[in-house]
Length: 448
Image (tube, rainbow, N blue to C red):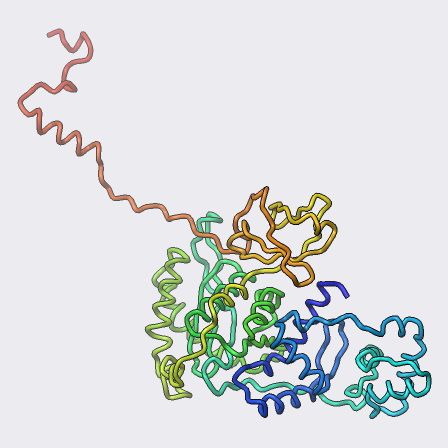
């Protein structure tokens, strides 16, 4: 299996067990949750729909707690040679399952060993049966189950969204640019956690708002977002996996649990956007300054009709919240890309060229970096550190998706005529004396 495919499988497995990895769970609560997860079917990255046993899920949870995301990557099969030499065994396994759908993969493996004296791993049989559409969930026509979106405490569930705003003057395009508000709200308290107006909908904008919200409010257990490009990307998946946040995407055309977010969006349009548009927007900086002040002074301090409390009071009602470790937060928001090392022991990224260890020539490596500092890249090969990438051609110091600082606005004219002031001072000093500017400049002016 390629490195990219292994990473995709690891992220998928984390999505399945994310809720069960929460440290606050007792063993009994975790066991009950894992049993519920084992009842559901999940869409695998290869397109198939799969259901997992309690033992498999427990093994994934242990692997994640011991090794992090790397522990969820699939390991090479020890029986691949046997299967390649005897493909008829897998055909017989399919016949045994079709004959009796209740037969487990382990039982089918025992039958094959009893008949042919060849041991085939249970996981190999189970994977093949799923690929053939013979897994027990499909044969039993079990309906898919979905979790309910209902928070019982602060930071249990955050909801993210993007609100389309007005056009704002933007010097970089010599005109106006559409403004987009990236926003996060706490499902339990209805607190507007953090929001920022930006001119582009991209991955980095969504990550910046999430990082700022975590720094201000603590780390959430779950993050519920839509399937738009700023949220459906590997960078956000990696951030959530490193921080232990369960990332949930709403189903297209079925946005259950987004009612609170939609009501907040409507409130922002009615109470903030109407006022700011009437006042006039000079720049994105002014728009964000006014929005942050309004959010803290108005939005988060209003008495909510459903809860009977202000969002900030309800959010703080259960004591201090769990903060993320700074080093872990820094690692979570680094980006990771894969590159093949050239014959000159170099790699490229965002138009820059870097040299790496010559032992990596021809290998596919992972580059981890802060998109705001492209001069420092860490190199990983097969999940292990492999030194740093040394820049020798740097045309960009920050990634293209990082919001750039706006050029300063033109200064307002003061109306001060400095040279006029100098002239007036000069005239005041020469009152009663000949002013050279009043002397005639031509012969005609001198003659009477």
